[in-house]
Image 1 (tube, rainbow, N blue to C red):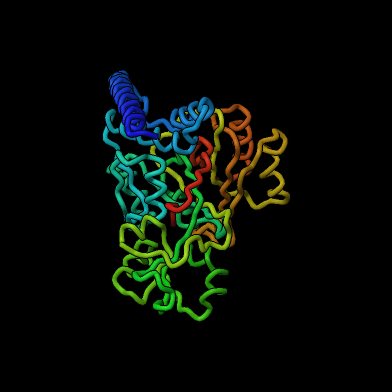
Image 2 (image 1 turned 135 degrees about the horizontal axis):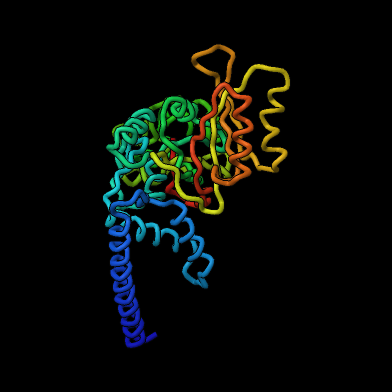
Amino acid sequence: MTNGNLDGLRQRIDLIDNQILDLLNRRAEVVVAVGKAKEGTEKTFYVPSREKAIYERLTGQNPGPFPDDAVCKVFREIISASLNMERPMSVAFLGPQSTFTHMAAMTQFGLSAQLVPLKSIPAVFEEVERGRAQYGVVPVENSTEGVVNHTLDMFFDSELQMIAEIMLEISHNLLSKSGDIEKIDKIVSHPQPLAQCRHWLETNVPDMPLLDVASTAAAAQMAAEDGSVAAIASHAASVQYDLQVVKAKIEDNPNNFTRFLVIGKKTPEKSGADKTSIMFSVKDEPGILYRMLEPFSKREINLAKIESRPMKQKAWEYIFFLDLIGHIEDPEISAAIEELRGHCHFLKVLGAYPIARNENIVEEKPDV
């Protein structure tokens, strides 16, 4: 290819970029008009179902060669900037920065949102309850290690709703200052990543001391300050703390996903592919477990998950958490929940929200 041909192609790219910029600004003008139309109404400015519909429509129409996952990432930032134009958005998350929950928050809300790291799950709930943040992001479940009980327990007293879920593939890296496994004396991380990498650790460093710390970011900081320490953390942590990868992708299960919840004050609109979450405590009577599931079975409602937790107020009594496919506004879903309510000491709808898109992020993944 001659320099003349290359210059011509670059000029074409510049022309296309100018057209993209013009379209972005035309889109921004419409966004401003939408924001003004919502003023004085009760309509929420963040609508997860609308975002999901945009991603599905664009990837469904995408002829290539630009990849679908890149389309979603580009439009995530366009949507993030657009939402910030309507109203600056503050999102609390279980921090600190460069943890997997931070990655999940960025994946859901983009880089234009104000992401606020907090030290605990209760602190995230409180930030949203008091209105200092519009939304919060917390981990709730890992496909390998199960539920994050602290998150579920918070819903017992909180009036916040589950308004979206984020499903992200988790990949763990062993990081150190030198990148040399021979110079490592101990390995640190959050208990969840340590558990998710248990087999690799037992096979490759069976005598290495393992230390639990508050977060993967805290582990990365320790490794940055001490050359004898290695951390199990995300690729983003290696960049932030200037660490080398000793070994990448050391998780035992290659299909390792963590589910995160977005919490807020208002149930979002139906998307057409939704999930409803409830919590309840049943009466102690013969056949109660059968009657607990019968309202859903006879209506052929798919139950995505059922989890039990002991009630802290009463010994040997349990709270059940149930995820079912459908929206609370669907007549069959609503009728099934009301029938179940008759067998319960209490029942609480925790939220109805769009079913998450499965993200496939190779290295920068989220965490608890």
